[in-house]
Image 1 (tube, rainbow, N blue to C red):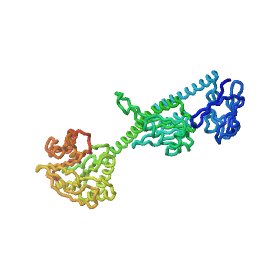
Image 2: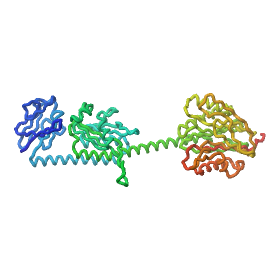
Image 3: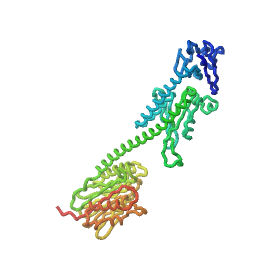
Amino acid sequence: MKGARLEVSDSSGQTRVVPIEDARFTIGRSHGNALSLSSAEISRVHAEIVKQGDGYLLRDLGSRAGTFVNDETVVEHTLDHGDRIRIGRHSDVRFLLEETSQTSTRATTSAVGDLRQTATLLEGLRALGTAKVLDQVLAMVIDYAVTLSAAERGFIMLVDPADELKFTLGRGRGEATLSGDTFQTSRKIPEQVFATSKPQLVADLHDDMFADAHEGTIQLGIRTVYCVPLKLVRYVEHVAETDVARPIGVLYLDSREKGSLSSRAIQLGLETLAAEAAVAIENARLYRESQEKARLERELHTAYEFQQALLPAAPPTRDFFSAAAEMVPCLSISGDFYDYLDLDGSFGFVLGDVAGKGASAGLLGARVQEIFAHRAPGSDPATTVSTINAAMVKKGLKARFVTIFYGILSPNGQLTYCNAGHNPPLLVGKSGVQHLKTGGLIVGLFEEAVYEQEVVTLSPGDTLITFSDGVSEATNTVGTEFGDDRILACLNAPPSEIEPRELVDQVMAGVRESPVGEPQSDDITVLVVRYRKEAAPS
């Protein structure tokens, strides 16, 4: 066996070659050894290399810190060309042979290692292609990266809505999740990688050019760092287009072993894994968003069904009037509401419009409707509206208010009403169109608000068209509001000649057919009441 030697690298990156010429080659801290290494953790005579036949045997001599070959603790080990020997923590020694047979053996071993790395990479890529849950994807990426690179730890940092990197997950060997919610290592490296969108390798943090900038990381015992960006690649039609890759975070790996992540094959494997990981992470995010959207839609549909159930199915049946109504939410849940009451022979009806749209407006509308149904019997319109106002003010719902039109129609044609900040309904009769405005301020904001009511007498055929501002304020492409005139213009005949149900349908159709130019922007509600004639004495 010829040409046996040790290649020794120091912390500055300089390398020296020490030939193994004696049958017994000792290694230790004492200057009397064939290879002297100055470190307090290395024993005076730490280990020896003994020639045995055609080979060389490495033997630990009872050292305190142990002897390692290719990161595995050994007591005795037959050396192969290229074996990495570690005496204590801070040494970097490689055993080299020039003999062809030994080199071939080592090359075969290296090839097997490359095949294992390739198999790990392919397995990881295949697994990422089927993963959907974000937490599982993140753990999977780190675990395969750690296995592929033989790193000790792996971290993923993802960009938040403020475009800042945030620690997301840390894992160690054995698929162990690292505790804590902070990035317990250098932030400078991942932030630089994210900013430049280029991988970065630091082979030895103990190097003087890195030591000051990464003092905290060095204190953790970390020597080697490799960080690669997670980039989403966009395929563009023109090569000149920029921003073809958008970083969404970084994959960070480190080790206490100097140069342990320096293999170009490992780096290429990690870059390939990172590219697929970015796609898998984004797909998992989209999947989570789609699941959340589907869940929300189910909940909103349930809320919509509940809200519809709160609306009256039909008005009370009486000879002296007829009525109809319809509500179309802008979103799944409407802030509008309407209701009917049978009040000892009189007909009570209300239409309310809560400020805002969606679920919060719908919840408040349901609450107001509940108060109305409880307080209205036995009270006049002004008193009922005052009660609702007091209840809302007491709750302290900031910037939340409701407009209300509440009317009570008696069999003799007297309509007593209170309009609390609502669009004035249109009372259409033989004498023309009257706007019912008497009432007061919007409900829910002012404790001192005072509400009034007015009594008007209806003639047979007189028709009251009540609506929310989603009808009157619907605009066309040039910004012109639908307005009261358009409400009347969309009717095919005088209101007295059209049944309330058909009147509601015609107004709704007119709003829908108007060249709005934009999707529906507000809840739409129409309520129509027709006075027929005074009921005959029983």
